[in-house]
Length: 117
Length: 111
Image (cartoon, rainbow over all chains, first blue to last red; front, side, top):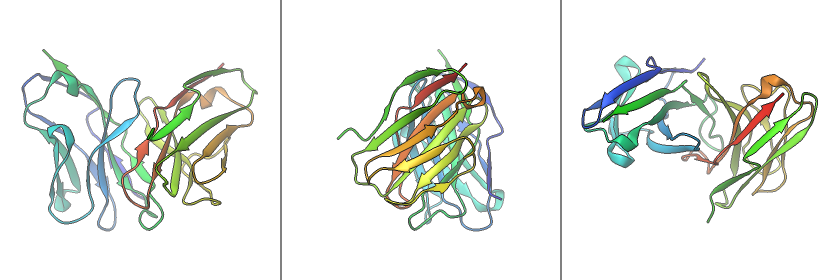
């Protein structure tokens, strides 16, 4: 069965420092991978997605993620974190019936990011 | 263009009461979803509707029913609420496998 693991429940970084949030997936074929961000009390916003092609994906707000098939990973990175990046981040993979008319996603449990001034 | 809207934003129920969560999207998307979010659990799919007139169970459907009223609206009903259904509920929509748009959520407490 497909699954998504985000090993870090909570990460704290200093403003201006670089950031890497880890995501590992379990999937038998080429996965569809996503990163979402959720600010407190808000819904989820899509940061970026990987379907195929270039393994380095650029997203909004200066985020990028790299798909590494050999490591089953899709880690999210940002070179310099801003205080406004404090939020919870979710990695997701397309469910087995994803594609065509099905857009079901399987989410990781999330990583909460705190930013120190 | 409001995207995905959900009502109500907050609700408190007593055990055994029923209620319906409403969701509407104005993006002409075929697919709509209901997720629940619990601390430390991420989001889990309750039900989805791939197109108007069809609904299917997701990962955690027990205790819920859904209705795809038309292409725009997808409601989630709790017939007899239980404390285990205390959660934040998110509706989402998508066009085929394209990115999913999420509503702002409904925070439900069952006492």
